[in-house]
Image (cartoon, rainbow, N blue to C red; front, side, top):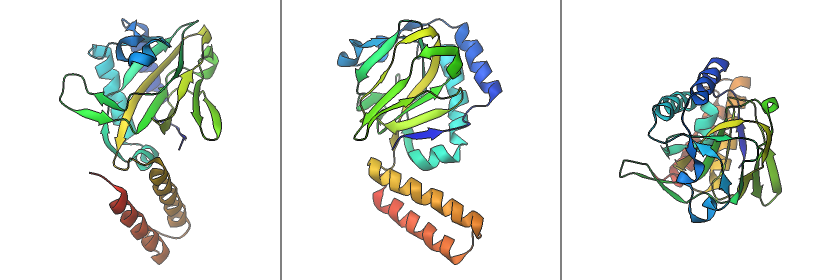
Length: 227
């Protein structure tokens, strides 16, 4: 499932992130790339242990944990701390696959990367190029979202970022280990949860149909989840 999640950060939060990133010190983005990815990766990244990365990461963590669509779609068990990248003119990231396991720096914890996430921090009209392109069985999907909005997609997908030709593209990215590792099962649960919400708004949360559907949802989650 490729999912657009709107309204993750508000205008003030985006402006705060941008101000911090404009004044931060950046390093070569290949510091977090695997062996194959490093050969096609050309961007800049905030150091994971920098003050800016920690501060902005906390802002994003708090925002995503309050977002019901994100929680419903990702069903997060473990989440890798947000990282931040910058693409200047001429920079791109060729076709690659994200590492299946990520070690959280400075801890013994590992995250299985079921879901990849990109949170856009530049407005689309601020730069040309820089589209995130995600490949799946149905072809190539091009993503370029307003600042403060994110896209979730299976980490098993080949994807790339096209070359920026004007301006600068700022973004945050991270990975999620879901309670439900199978993408088709997560999609089924998400669609059921969205349908339950629609029915409960049309009827009521205590309507017998809503209660029955909610029961089905939790029985499926109980069957699929690994916690």
